[in-house]
Amino acid sequence: ANDLFPGQPSKVVFGFCIADCSGTGSNTNGNQAVAVLSDLKTYNNGEFSCNGGAFFWVAQHDVNGGFSDLVYAEVSKTAAA
Image (cartoon, rainbow, N blue to C red; front, top):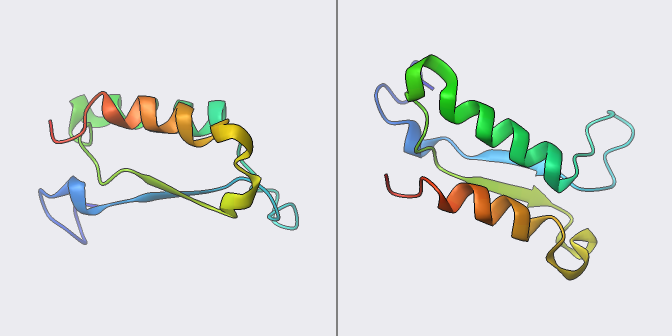
């Protein structure tokens, strides 16, 4: 992030694939996405605590908000911090 957007981590958005990415082994459930986003907030003394948020592929697989509700709760902790 520092090379692309120096000092502006809010311009970096993290993408996750809920389903249909098994060919690359990169399917991620909500808990795994939350762990990535949570760990990111502590990286480099919190330099990336207020990042650009998250998005996910294949929204139709977000059954009853099982993915997005978890991720939203984590992102909201430091949104616009």
